[in-house]
Image (cartoon, rainbow, N blue to C red; front, side, top):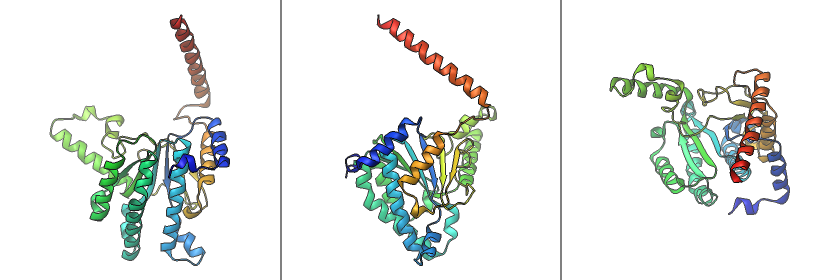
Length: 280
């Protein structure tokens, strides 16, 4: 199924209007929270909540791809989630297996590249095998990069990076003086993706929950009270529009940002003049 062809005209118009508003976030990260509470409020089982949550995943992945978002990272299962009841963990793993088996072909046909971050060695062997097959199948796709954070912990990844740097120092490959923020970032599992521009958290909770702790230093955060199974493309559009109307200062003042904007505009104008001169 081609997601562009299947998209209805009204949704296309909404996306076109969003794109006109300014620069889209290149990387959106999502803490998908509230499946269980959504189900309990409706007298359903937690399993049904997780199943409905997968429908939200499908819609948000499609909408992101259609909009031209380059990176989407979903917090699917944390290291701490292994502490949940064994039965629920088993159900989550089965749902993940089902998703990978059922969605891979459609993701591939729509130019989506699939990646994961997290302690993948702790996942069931069948999941590890499916993930490897998914990576190989989609590795050359250059549309949306969909990253599933599985058995993931921001602190775990930072500690892991420190351990790897320490080993390289011991081996003489790196000296302590070489260690910078840029070098440190290359040891994280997220090294091949840009830092998130926008982090969306559903269910109204106001915390990072050990997700992308290093990477979110200057990322914008959007909180919605909606539970994840309720969160669909129109909610994604709201979050993106909210982001697009924020001023990202990265520690600078508004005046500095405005000044830099003027410089950038002037540079662009100068470059156009130079190009026009060269073409004569």
